[in-house]
Length: 123
Image (cartoon, rainbow, N blue to C red):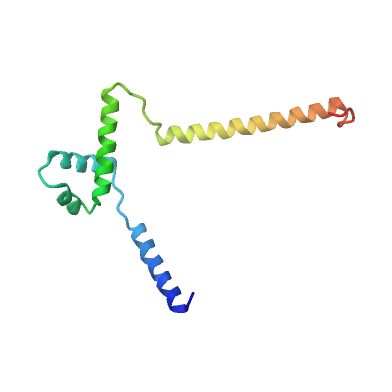
């Protein structure tokens, strides 16, 4: 790659990184507000998205997710996703259980070796 092409590539990468870092993150409440505003139909979806600084594809994805979640809830599907604290606790418990299992496996191997006599009997 030539020096000029390399500089152009670096500049494009820098612009891309800045855009990614400054991308707006919407809370669940903001997403719901925007989707409900779109469903009301007072303004076109394109106008709503322009005003909110949002790509129309993102609006339609949120709208689909919103309606699917409502449909599941009305159908009686009340299973909820775990909260981040629950996930954190489950991961910690899983790590503890894995450590305990590893210790027990090591003890088991050591006991087998001591009973067999360091593997002299062919196991």
